Structures are given as structure tokens and as C-alpha cells.
Length: 244
Image 1 (cartoon, rainbow, N blue to C red):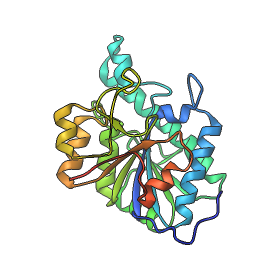
Image 2 (image 1 turned 45 degrees about the vertical axis):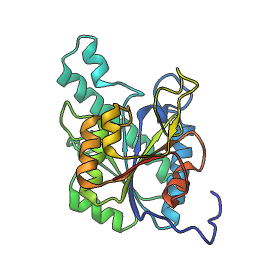
Image 3 (image 1 turned 135 degrees about the horizontal axis):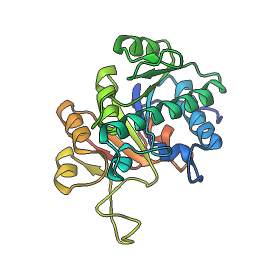
């Protein structure tokens, strides 16, 4: 872990980090990559070292996506519950990587499974953060038809986070798909209404609307560049920002 610079003053004191399941997959085609989990854990531990209270949510797309299996013919509710269970697997993997770095961690699940995780209790989650523990929220909202984006927005409001940091595989929000369009332009500052009006695929509309109603900033940045998580929390110019 790099030594902290004396001028490192975080812009945000309590944040929610939204990680996709694909992020934990690394360069593999399926499952999670322990090396990637360790790298992410290292960056979270750096935030922890400068006094930032960190909560995280993880997706399950590296194992199964509920909406994908439902499109293949499975019942949507069953598919969504399978996706929620996949997020618990990822949360436990991230917890293990963090605890190897001596960072105290709690996993809270929206679906009760007391042998492996605490149930989600808002006041308990806040107390863990105040005591310097990283809290990982798993199993989405516990309800089908709601994405992990919506779960991230909801948990961020509940714990009083100052911003949501969405870690992706691209370096921000573009006006069109940068993979298919080399001329796509990166948008550094947007409002919630611009995201909704332009149909930009940043987070689903429910999550963006919830953030808009509660004036919760969303920072979208590239997870694949080492150091971006910390730079974003320090308030440096990283990725794209959605705010009022």
C-alpha cells in the first residue's frame, strides 16, 4: 500500500462504492479473480487508512444475471433470487480479501442467512461504519425486479452516504457507446435529468430517479486503472459526475 501524502484530505467522509460482479471477474470469463478482489481490497484499505467510512455493494453478473436467465425462459422472480444469492458469494469473496489486509468487515444481506452474514439493519450498519468497519451490502434489496443499482442507491440514502461511486470498465459516461463509436464524447458533468432524458446507460432509471430526489451525487469512473477509487474520493478529476 502506498504511503499517504500529507495533503490527502478526502472530499467525502462516508461513501458507498458500487462494484459490478464483472469487476470481480478480472480477466477471467466467469467467476471471480482473487487477484482482482485483492487489488480492490487494497484500494478500499487505503480509503480506510485516511479515515473514510466505506460501504460497498456488489453485483452478481460474473456468476448469474437474473434478467438474463429470465429472458432465456426461467421465471423472472426465481432468476432474480438466484442473482441475489450470487451477490452474497461476491460479498464474501471481497470480505475475505479485505480481512487479509486486516480491515474489519461486515457483510449484511437483505435475505436472511445468519450463518454467513448479518441481516441488513440500518442502525447496525451505521454503527459498524462509525467503528471503522467496512460494510458490504449483499442480496440487493431482497426483492425481485430491483437491480443492484437501485439497491446501491437505496442503501446509500439509508446510511447517509455523501456520494455513490460506481466503478465500471470505462472511464466515465459517454454520449454513445465508446466501444462501437470511436468518436463518442465523454461527459464530465451531467444532471440527473440529462441522464434520464438522453437514456444514458449509467444506472437504471429507478436508481437515478432516487438519487435525483435525494440530491445524491453519483461518480462514474474506471475501476481498471489502479488508484482511481482513492482519487475519486479525494475529489480529484476522475470519470464523470452526476449531480444537481
